[in-house]
Image (cartoon, rainbow, N blue to C red; front, side, top):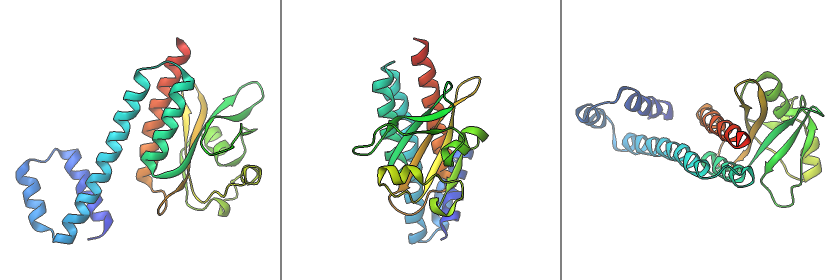
Length: 205
C-alpha cells in the first residue's frame, strides 16, 4: 500500500471519529503489510500529538524565557526527528534576526539582516516553507554555514507571530532520515504558535 493511502486512512480515522465497527471493516480490507504501514503512520501521528502535549506541559510551569525556550527548541528537534533547531527573534532596532536559542556545540549568537536567507524570507513574507535542498535554493544564506562549519541539507522554517506582527522564526535543520514533508511543516506551525503564545505570556509577566 502506498504511504499516501495509509495517511489518508489515518486522517479519516481522526477527522471522522470512526466507530469500532468502521475500524474493523477498514482493517479487514487491508493486507498484513498494509496494516503494518497503517499502524506505523498512526504511531507517527500519536508521537506528534504527544509533542504538542509536551510543549504545553513544559511551558506551563515557567515564565522564564531562559528555561522555556531551550525546552521548546529541544522538543522541536525531537518531534521533527531533526539534527538541530534554532529560534530567531527580530531585533527591531537593527533590523536583524538573531538566534535566541541555537542547538549545536560551540554555536554562538547568529545575527544577520532580517531579509536574508530562508529565515529572512519567512520573516518578511510570513509564509512557512519546506526546503528539500538548501544549497539548490537561491534564497539560502550560505554565510552562516561557512561561519559555523556546519552543512545544512534541508530546512523547515515557520514564522513566529504575536497578535500584531511577526517577531521571529523557528527553523529546523537536517532531518535525520529522509526529507521534511508537508506534515512536518504543519506540526512545526502548531508548535511555533504555542511558542509564540508562551513568549507573549512570559514577556507580559
